[in-house]
Length: 213
Image (cartoon, rainbow, N blue to C red; front, top):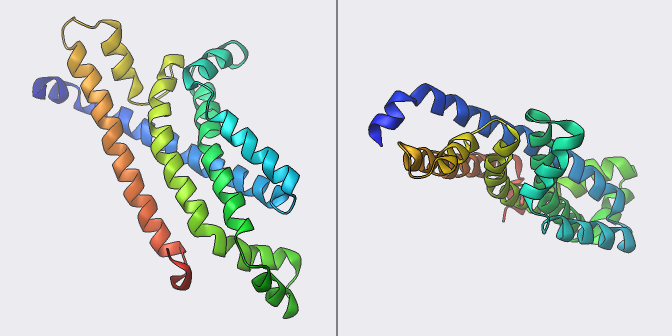
């Protein structure tokens, strides 16, 4: 195992960086999309229910099947990887964003409006910051989930550590096949732990002390 890693250390590090970068960038994109949708629907119970329903149904879609469907219209490579990872990342974030915004006491919003804040300023300065801990929880859940999804997208020649897993599985029983699978799996787990620690630190830095949970 040590020889396998030593001989391919540069390749492993590069694939790890690609994997981490893919997940991090898709998380940012998914957060922006999810919060925007949540802002548009959270005041309407019907739309909120629809968004939560779509989120719940979306989580039941097999990532492997979605990748297969995307190969025909968008081809192989980074594009299907970004679409699939962003799609799955957005689902928990969307649900948590709606919950976080809905859980803010109406009296707090009324107080903000009472001192002259506009609807937009109240949303940006009061509602989103107060909902942020709940939104961040959704981001952390998404990060752990899509770290594994990002490995699966290597089936469509996407970047990341999934290549080691699929290469090992394709020649299981052959030379270094087990080492290749273990390298990919352990690498994904380590990256997931690192990203969670980073998100935990971001939460400490960006959450107002008075509303930390």
